[in-house]
Image (cartoon, rainbow over all chains, first blue to last red; front, side, top):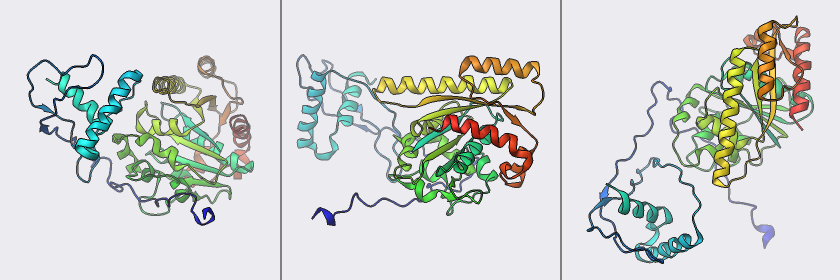
Length: 120
Length: 257
């Protein structure tokens, strides 16, 4: 059985960059996507001591939506967090995945929480 | 496989001469060697007269890949007419477009492309950049960094800046908790001719020595080098290039383990 299995998935073949041949003087990077205003769930974050913001709920922008056919502009956020908070995040992702499907991810929930708490 | 990036933050300090020379002497020593031109100026590409395997299929294809570029280096490496063990991944002017690359993890594409590369040694000819996507790609892909410097104020500046970039990269990786094995091999220095060192040259050498170990010998920059670069030839093929070739062979033996 294993003798018939390939070592790994087939690799892609090299292809030119999408802007190959565009002279640097003419090159313009894709514009940053405009944040799309949208409502966000105000359900409290689960976990010990965590409560929903006391302020009245108001629409806050969500993270920039991916650009169709283009690259989404993001920045690297790499930090270590406590196991307790990680457990809260994992549980929230699991719960939101059941509710929203594949659109719920750690990134989505982190972005929503940050925007809900600190967005002006 | 060992990957060495040849780097300085200054221009005109023999980066390309060092990168091409280390790569070629490595091939002459029996190592299967791939030289990657990671500079939009494409000086090594021009010197070695390398043409890409297809339109747009230069190193910019790897750095601008919108799909996983694992293993692409093997497909993009072009055999050199200089030596059967030397291959070159060429560059082009539009590699500069990648300097505004903002995709997540774009800086890891070069490293991914080296997977399963049929080579013992990879030498990366870097651009004189203060960090940025090109330099970060090289830093992620390399095991060792070889600084290149002329015995001049530009040589000192270039090594000073390059060391700062490497140290910042290490700190950044440490903050992420990621392992980086990149180490400094030292500095390969060139000076004009073979006569007495001028006071300025000696001063520059002393100052560079305080920054990083100098890999002896100091390489003489002889007129044969610009001559062969204009002609697209290897100086080692000419009698007048022998002192340069011997010097870089010794440098290569100290850099390639």
